Image 1 (cartoon, one colour):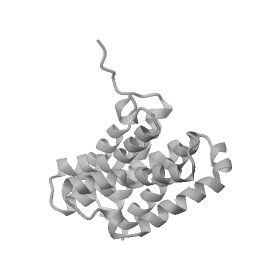
Image 2 (cartoon, helix red, strand yellow; image 1 turned 90 degrees about the vertical axis):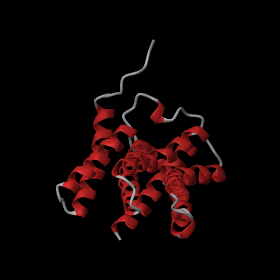
Image 3 (cartoon, one colour; image 1 turned 60 degrees about the horizontal axis):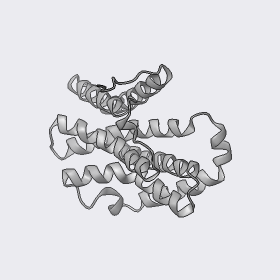
Length: 200
């Protein structure tokens, strides 16, 4: 039940993130819906295809499509209020990567793949919807910049595995992991922490 709730919440949060990105680029309603869709389910779709979990999640449960369709009018009608909030897109995106990291990790572990692969798939779930969003909106994806983005997901995934090994109760482990990913991302942006750049 918890993992499904996280999945639906993450889908809605990422759909809003994608729709807001479309609004900034002045896309029409259809374009906003497409960008919201790929942001919300792009990472999970890639993950499911890679681990052979097909048909992918959103094809088996129409709740995902309904949430994405709901995110478009919510973003549209409340965009004036949302745009007044500082770094709203950053907030939605950060919450989304925290939720999807743990979701992708748990989904991969559940089918018996190794913890290392699970951490990778958690990261794919979290960031690749954003990669597709950025490519379609002609932005350089965050994971290709110096931003601490995918790194936060990897650290969060390793934290989950460590706490699991220590016997921490599952719901608490999930909560701590999501919070850690969000905290790392927020602290990195607030204090301008970046990965080293490869230069000549």
